[in-house]
Amino acid sequence: MKSLKKQRRIQVIAVAVVALALSAGLIGYGFRDGINYFRSPAEVVAEPPAETELFRIGGLVADGSIVRGEGTKVRFEVTDGGATVPVTYDGILPDLFEEGQGMVGQGRYVNGTFEAVEILAKHDEDYMPAELVDSLKEQGVYQHQDGAAAIN
Image (cartoon, rainbow, N blue to C red; front, side, top):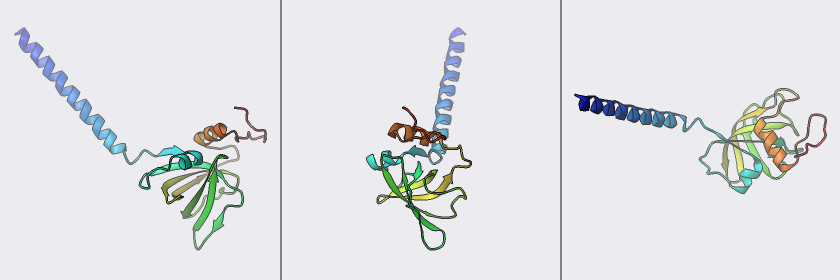
């Protein structure tokens, strides 16, 4: 009788392990399209991602780089102080989108140009995405709100 209890316990543990592995696999499969990695322009230039990879890029809109095309098409450059990446976007830009301000775009890097499907801009005078601040600090170009350069 004791061996029957032990055998049943092992069977329950085995079924639980299989169920846990299956649920972890299903969760991973569900998130595969929902995870978008953040990259700075320097990272994109150093190691260009595959054209099929959807990711986020963040930086400052380069001064003098915004060129509006027909309709809602716009071209501009995003920089982190170390590298600059050209961006194209067809859509309505946020009201606070302007040169010299922080932005985050989501899209794909195709033939040396980031083709954005979504553009986000800062929402008040103090906001800058944490990933962008970290990237700018690494490049040594981050500036505090009072205009003084940050010390790494």
